[in-house]
Length: 170
Image (cartoon, rainbow, N blue to C red):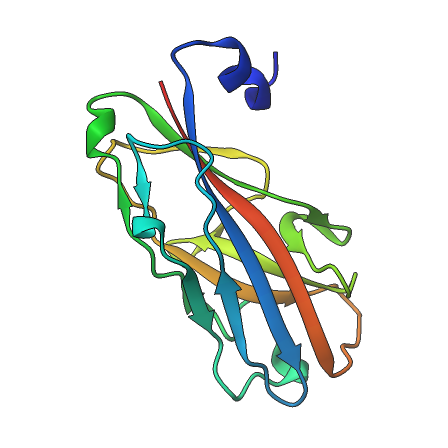
């Protein structure tokens, strides 16, 4: 049984989900990243009070400076898992991986561009892998940053990417 099947076969496991949608325009500058929320199961976790999450990269995102470090932005969200009590909780960013880096979310329109989700703005949180949280009161500090494939040249234009943030508790 793999990790994705735990919630289907273990009556004690529960999932809470958050759909993350990324949408940006690349000209000489890009707009913002938008997040939409879809809760796949109710409490004990409340993710961002059911409100959309938006990350704005600003107006000065230059395509020549996208390197997986520049333009990193905090993903501001709330997470309340107090109802989970002392149950173990883990988190996953689930979505399509970029062809050039399996740890990065793929862009729908541009195979040479993706979005990395970083934990504490240091370590890339690999897509489709679980991260065990220290407690039900732990809210991971996450950032989003655009990443381009090595030796690729980006062209101006729009791109989008999406993922689901899952919280599993036992």
